[in-house]
Image (tube, rainbow, N blue to C red):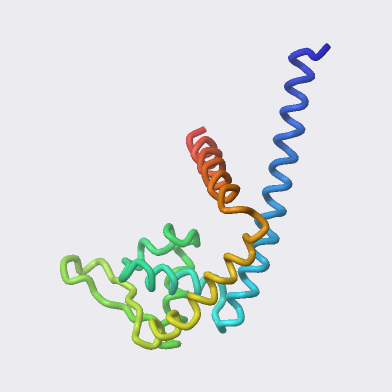
Length: 152
């Protein structure tokens, strides 16, 4: 006969196991993605910033950090590095002098035109261990879990 104490203990065990499995899976995926990105001569943070601007257009520098999940203190450094490589440029906002946008250069667009399709293929290969239905289900479940944790 199972009692509430046994059920609570089992739920704690399963929750801890899920945390470990999820963390290890993310680490394994990140290693493979970062290997792919480093082939481009960019580090993962530079690639993330360049990819954001490539796919979403000019971005206020002050907002890039929250969109690519890096510390706002690192953004200036990353933008500086990308600017030195002539992949991005700073563009003052015509409506608000306090705001500066990061804009992709022709060289940056050409680089991403080459890199991004290969990157998409690499991501697809990494996730080939799941069917499309499993991926869609996992997306739903992880969103649900993330929103619950955020709202606690």
